[in-house]
Length: 364
Image 1 (cartoon, one colour):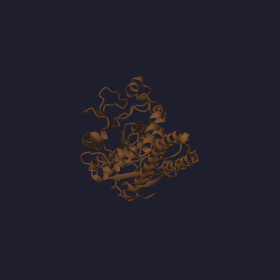
Image 2 (image 1 turned 120 degrees about the horizontal axis):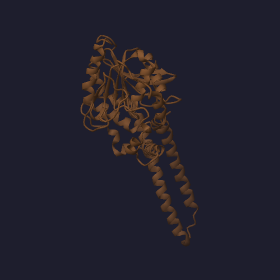
Image 3 (image 1 turned 90 degrees about the horizontal axis):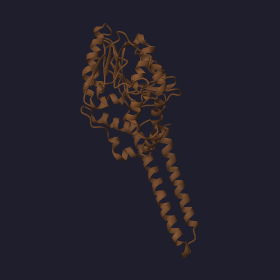
């Protein structure tokens, strides 16, 4: 059961009803003598404010949760589900060809981040996007959420789905460390790496970055605040669930992305962020990758990429961090070229791979 969007809303509504009942009992016990009318009026004003607040939060939270559940039932994610370590993991493949491009989203996102990009890349080769444990259609998995564990889960998922290589891994933001870990653990399966504003191992220890990105609040406090607003349904009433307006994005997919923005899995976000330092220690020693083809897409031309090699290419574009949403044209233009470069090295061929699966969700 979804804790944030099922258990908590129900608890909030029950708490609101309990507060209302206790308030009524309290007011009924107050004497109505003339000398107590001022006290009665004060109590009534305070209790009315408290009850209004808890009722609004409780009702909004429940309505938000019901709307989420209804939307999920009516709009299942495209792709298929597989059992990994006893837990459901979601994978969406489309197109045909080899090597297979595997897409790994940034922190807080899931496979829907690639909604406009994946169909374009699938015109060139087979492309699979997946949801890490705790995000999208993938269930939470117990244990550490560091790079090595996440890479092992992806490897098991690809094995269950019959994606046995060669693969080009493309990771956005924090997933840059995850694809590093995968390449170091399963080098025989990896035909290339694509970093889209990829996180650098141990970048969290750089005081310049901490100063530039500091919010003034501890991480736990920021996450708690955002999580509380999300559970209470504030993003929905603000209009965030309506979906982004992005060129080339159909209405159905935009609606899915909108619901995704209102269904942030903060517990999973915090788990991966808490493991950020450990992931950095696991991957800081990865590379150099020799002749492995690498593509780096970044808005920061001053950044020193440890992945840089004679075969790496760096692209600079307009100042925007969220490349996958704001500048998908860069990825859609350069990644197919990169795939052809990989093929030119004798890795994969157009006739390889299998067509992607449909919208039915199946556990295997």
